[in-house]
Length: 445
Picture 1 (cartoon, one colour):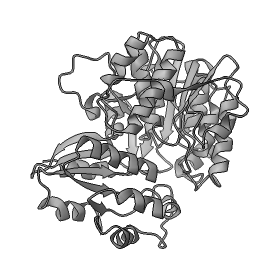
Picture 2 (tube, helix red, strand yellow; picture 1 turned 90 degrees about the vertical axis):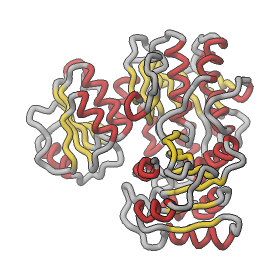
Picture 3 (spheres, helix red, strand yellow; picture 1 turned 120 degrees about the horizontal axis):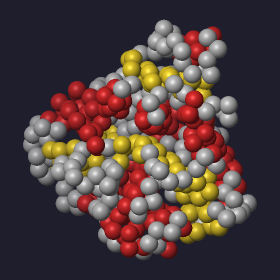
C-alpha cells in the first residue's frame, strides 16, 4: 500500500461506507477535498452524516455505482470477495485497499497510540482522546463509535447522533486509534504505545481458540519498540503470556487511582485507568487527566441514555454483543439503578458466536429480571437453523427461574410485548451489535 499517497487522491469510492471505521477515513478524505462516493446495504445515522458532509452514497451493492476516474476503492474486511463492486473494480483495474491497509498509511506517518482488547476499546479510545484534547496535545483520533469533542463546550443539549464524531483531525504527530483484532487487522499498525484492555475468546469464526488470539496480540506487542509502552494489566491470566517477548516497557494500569466517574460499572473504571495511564506515559499532568475522566460522558451505544417510554421506563442503548460485555453492562445498570426492575432486550450477533458461547450468554442474561430476545443478526454469516433466539429463551426459562424470558419474531413484536407493562419502576437496556438501536429509538416516547 506504500504506493498510495493521500496527497494525490482526488476521488475515492468506499464499499461499506457506513462502517464506523471506513466512514472515519471517508470523513478525513472529505476534509482534504477528496470527492467521496460509497455504498452500504442500509441508510444509517453515519451515512446520513456523510451525505450532509458531501459524500455521494448509494444504498445497495451493484456493479454500476463506482464513478469513473476513481483513484482508489476502499472496503471493510467484512465485505465478501465476490461483492459486485469489488468484482467491477478488479475488472477495471482500479487500486483496492482494505480499511486496515488505509490505517497502515496513516499510522506510518504518526506517533501511533493503539487501543486494543476484546472489549472496552471504543470507550478507552474516546477517553484517551478526550484527555489529550483537553491537554492541548491536538491528536488525530479514530474511534470505533461516536464520541463528543470535549472542546465543543457551547452545545447546550448534545446528542451523539447530532454532535458525535468518529474522527477528529489533529495538527500534532499523535494518532490515537481503536485497534481491531478481527482478522488480525491491528497488525497493519505501527504503534509506539499500545493499550490492551483485556483479552478474551471472541471472533471464533476467524480465530481457532484463545491461544490463537493471544498469539496475535503477542505479535502486536512485539511491534512496540524498546522506547515504547505496553499499558495493560500484566497480572491478567490471558494477558500475561502475550508479554513474554515484549521489548517495550510494560506499565500496569491497575495501579492508577481515579475519582468517581459519570459512566457506571467496574469495566468503565478499568477503561479509565487504562486511558489515564497511557496519557501519563505521553506526559499529560494527572490533574488534567482526573478532570477529563470524571466528566467523560460516555460514547455512542455504550450504555447510552435514549429517553423514557410512555410509561416512564428509562431506555438505554448498548453495543454489547459477547457474554463479557453483556455481563458488564448488566452489572453497570444494576450499580446505577439497584432498586429498579432490569429489562434486557438482546439481539444476538452472529450464529457462530451465539452457538459458541451459548451457556455464557445464558449465564450473563440470567442477571436480568426479564429478557426479550429478537432474532439473531446474521451480519456476514449465512443462516444457521441449528441455533436460534428461541433456544436461548427456552434455556433461560429452564435454568434461571427468577428471570422471565421470551423470544420475539421481530422488533415490532418486542415493542408490542413490552408496551403495556413498562413503568417508571423499570430500566430497559437494548443490547446488540446489529440494528437493535432502532428498537431503542422506537421504545422512546
